[in-house]
Image (tube, rainbow over all chains, first blue to last red):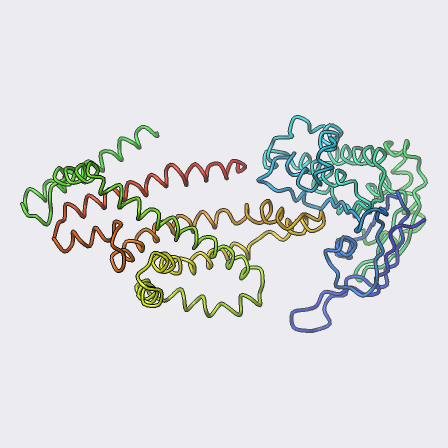
Length: 249
Length: 248
């Protein structure tokens, strides 16, 4: 049962001088099942972020349709978005940053405390974001996105520019939270190892104009994903099997 | 460090007083009374209640025109900064109003609305609004798009966006224009009082001017400078410190 249906025929950014502009996405078809964690994998500049912004409704200037999942009692789908930069409000405390995006009802039911506890940020609830490390800011952004109980969670390379051990811890944290609060996730990355570690399915995009080049089911059990050798073996098989798909990565 | 700064500032103020005293003794003229005479006038003014009353009236006018100018100026500034069409439509008006001399607005307001309180306050506000607009327009143009997108995705209410996303980013611009605004407005208020009101510091200064009573003029000036300084220390600086807590 698919809950996210993407059909973008054409997404271009106009040039300043009225020329044809840059064609970012072309004939991109993708459907995502409820509760699925899909990784979009593609070289930089292939339109991954553009695609997320189209899904999020930040960019409506494209030819095509995007059907989003939403709960029957809600007028609109609830979207959680973890941006590449944490995008926290520096003048609000960690707690206030999360509470800001919640409704009165949600605030009342202890979700903030739960999320802070789940990410090990209990002691930093009153801290301002500038006092935190990048890894911690990213955890706050993760809390914020999960706290709204999203119908769909969009993640745009949320763990880049972290050292590898921190990134790995955050990936494990993401999976743990996601398993407790299942939701549909579209996760953008250019890192094949990261994609294998996280995804139910990897969608490989072509260089610009971005289109779906290949879809790969990751049939590794969740329990195996913590094992670097299993990841590496899976990666090597993919590379040996279809080297042309990954040559731009 | 702080201690030596206070000492230095006191010494420098003392030096100013000394120069004043020396010049006054040398001239021995009514047009430059010595500090002590001014102090006597000051004390007498406070005892009779004249100085507090007139300073109070002037301050009320300053507050009214300041609030009016800030609220209207901030609203227009944000609109012009965020909407290119509005900006293009009214940019010409803005340049025009920026360059109308304060005296002209005052005279026109008094001519059109009569010698009334409303006319006085409106005239002062009109003088300040264009400055607020120009500053806030820059601020609104510089708003962080990333944060606005975040607010949009998480479907923040309009009011919430304004209060938690937009206003904190505009705060340095607002504080800047508030500071310069206060300094400008209280000076303009004095002129407006001189032209068309029968009380307030401006009116008193005018009366003393006609009598060549420099001691009276200086007594009022000193009081007013002190009051404005007090507003800066007791109101603006603590407010700014509170708003800037989050900065490291």
